[in-house]
Every structure is written in C-alpha cells, then in structure tokens.
Amino acid sequence: MLPESGRKLAGRTLYRLAPVRLAVFFVVLVAGDAAAQLALEWAFHRAPVSVADAVVLGGSIALAAALIGIYAALVHGMERRKATEVSPGVGQALAGVVLGLVLFVAVLGLIHVAGSARLLGMSAHFDAVPVLAGSILAAVGEELALRGGVFRILEESCGTSAALVVSAAIFGLLHALNPGATVVSTAAIAIEAGVLLGAAYRLTGNLWLPIGLHFGWNFTEGGIFGASVSGDAAGQGVFAVTLAGPRLLTGGQFGPEASVIAIVVGLTAALVMIAVSVRSGRWKPMTWRMTLG
Image (cartoon, rainbow, N blue to C red):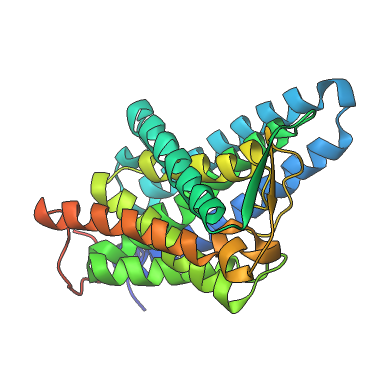
C-alpha cells in the first residue's frame, strides 16, 4: 500500500492525464449545458407572458455565466492555472458575431441565387428574443465543452490536426439526434461548423471568437431569418423567408446548415483561418503527451 504522500502524488498525476481531463471536462460541461437548456425551457414555459422575454434573456445570460464559472473552476482545479481562454474578450466576441452573420447571409444569398430561397419582407411578428436567448446559451455551452474542453486538451496532447478532426466529429455526432437529422446533416455540422469553430479557436487561442461566431450564425439563421437551427424550428424571424427545393440546397427540416452551400461557405472560411494559423506558427505539430507540464 502506498504511503499517504505517494497516494497524494498519484492523485495529482491522475487528474493531470489528458484522457482523465478530457473525460471530466466533456461530461461535466455537456451535462451542464443540457441542464441549462432544460432550465431555460422551463423558465420560458413558466414565466408570465408579460415578462417572458426578459426572464428568458436574463436567465440565458445568468446560465451562460454559470457555465463559464464551471469551466474556470475545472481549469483551476485540474490544471492549476487561470482560464485565460475565457478572460473577457469583447472585441473578439463582436468580431465573431459579425463573421457569423456575414457567413450565414452568404449561405442564404447563395441558396437564393440557386432558386431555393425567397425573401418575403419583414415579418409582422417575430420571435427574436427566445432565439437570442437560446443562441447565447448554445454558443457558450457548446464552445466550452467542444473547443475549451475537447479541442484544447487534445491539441496539447496530440497536436492541432488531431484535435480539429476529433472535436469536429464529436460536434457533428452530438447533433445527430436533432429533429430532421440525417447522415448528411451530421457530416455537414462536423465539416462546416466543427472545423470552422475549431479553426477560430486555434486562430486566437481564445474562446470568445468561436463563441461569437457560433452565436452570430445561429441568431442570424433563426432570429433574423426564421430558419430552423440544427433541426429546431425557430418560429418567426425578423424577415420572412421561404425555402423550397432540393434538400441538398435547403437542408430540409434540419435547416440551411445541412445544405451543401453551407458546407462550402463554412469550410472555405475555416481553410482561410487554418492557413493564417499555419503561416503564423500557431498550428501545433502532431505529438503525444499524456500529462501537463
């Protein structure tokens, strides 16, 4: 039997192992995100109509802050450092939001050019606030788990390429059970979003650019144009848009994210970020390191 000092040393070594940290970060943060989403949905259905928007929006911000706190606590407890990757980054977050908006507008514009999307004008009534709240929570929760947890830990132990491929694949699979999901939609999410968001994180080493990008895309898709977001019907957007035509162009029930056009746009943007990261020396070569330090 190990003496007490030996047991403490073994315990410290265990939680510094990459597979252990990867499992803990992933399970805790995915569970936290799921619980936060359920709490937000509960609040939406229980709040009086007169204050529902304020409750849901305020609740999403509070829950997102709680998830960031959980992430920072995991980093401090298991890695003995400050989580600088979630230090306030307003500029990067805003840049991500603008980029997400521009990319999705490009997707919808190309679908329109292909004859499968039609803009009907502004909606008489729109449900932007619930989509805004949901987009905030999804962007923060999913980026903490997939880019802050899976990508970051895999990158330090296996290199950037392995981290990008594995984290993107997991991201796609997490959306495989969404309404309207198909093999094509799962692959599309992995390629256009998983690769793009991983590339955004690698470009900066900070989570706020991918969080802003994730939010900007989702809110533009559902809150502004009223399209389904990863299979979830968004209701009325600020603008009324109809999508009709081949599923490969419109994405079908899953939404425009599952279209081949979204794959091309998202992957193109990702390849630009990857090229910049490689040329600036930020792309970490393949390695194999099991522990921190």
